[in-house]
Structures are given as structure tokens and as C-alpha cells.
Image 1 (cartoon, rainbow, N blue to C red):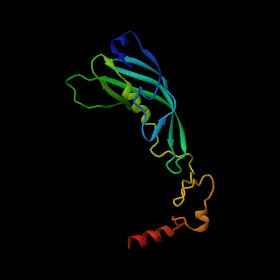
Image 2: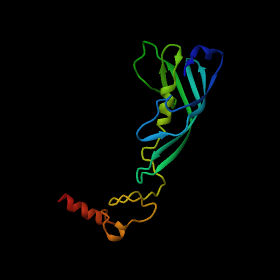
Image 3: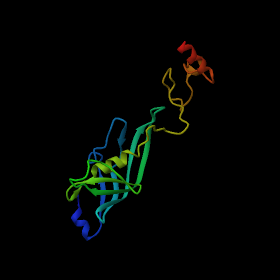
Image 4: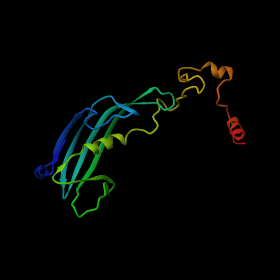
Length: 176
């Protein structure tokens, strides 16, 4: 997608997004983009800067870090980003903060916002996704999902994680 800055002199330009994850080079080992990236972005010329405003939304699936069950994340993000023309005299800074609004540089008369859109989506992904706040995780001995019920390891005392404060004593014994 390309935005011609010269066209913005006659008024704002609005684009509608409905692209696959491949278009924005989204897809990684830790997450799966389930639905297209959708949204509407308006580009406006404000003095010597270009303002991108709009909304982005998609559906992403990650694994819970405790029980490894799939977690569905529905991202809906309002975006505001300034594009500043990068002249040859300016330094090589990539991003500056302008009045608390994210900003980025462009060269020439064309803005290609694809990488910025990609980053705006990625920053919304949680570092530690949980299926639910009180996820019990997996049994460290047999691997059973403890959200679906207890396992025989706990009943037989095989569970390697001691209860209460006794873990501190276990740690002291390991250190000595």
C-alpha cells in the first residue's frame, strides 16, 4: 500500500484494509493470525507532517503459557501516527515522539505504512498470554492440564512442587 503525499494537498485520503497476514509479514512461532487485518485509515496533511488515524482489528491465536491451550485474542486498536518527511540534513533517527503521539519518517513523496501497521499490531500481543487469570497450568510430573481436573500425581504425593512455605526449605537444601 502506498500513499502519495501530493494527493493529500487536495484533502484527506481514506483507505480500507482487508489484507491477509502475509501482506504485513505477520506470522511467527508464538502466534497465528486467524483472520485478515481489517480497518480504515485516514491520511491527512497537517502543515509539513502527515497524520495517519484510524482503527485496526484482527483475530490472533496464541498458546497459554501455563497450560498450552489456545487463547483467542481479538485486537481492535485505535491508531494515530505522524509521518515526518526525512530530509538529507536530518539525522538517522527512526522514530521520535511528537506530543505523545507515535511518529515515523518517510522519504520522497510516497509513504508506505505497511511496517508501521505491522508494528502497531505486534505491540498489542501480550508477552504472557493466559487462557484465564486463574489458569492452573500443567502438572509438572505427568503433564495433565490441571484446569480439567486433578491428576493422580497430586493424590499420590508425586508432584515435585511442595506446598506452602516448604519450597523455601527445599531451595535451601539445594543451595547447600
